[in-house]
Amino acid sequence: MNFFLASICILGGYVRPYCLGTTVEIYPTDTRIHELQSAIIIKVNMDTLESDSSGIKPYLVQYATMNQTEWVSSNQL
Image (tube, rainbow, N blue to C red; front, side, top):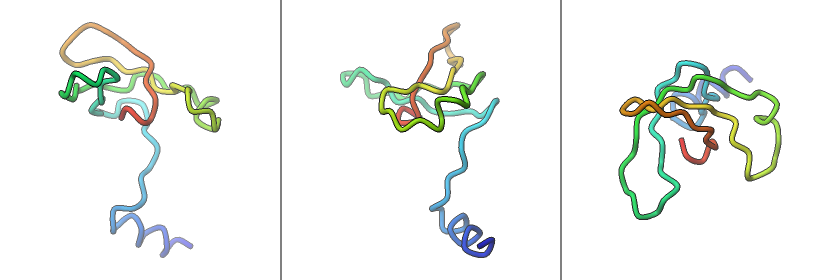
């Protein structure tokens, strides 16, 4: 099993979950804006990560260019 996961990781198919302090690019929810914004994950709600609901926003991010925090979904990262 470890060889299988290592193979997937090398090929770029295995993505580990985001953790605290990870620098991410946020896709905007507004379709008129086409710029990505840099942010840092400052809190992860572990209870919502295991949920299958589509409206869950488990990551609290702090934007790099402005003094704003926001809960975002994994689809926005």
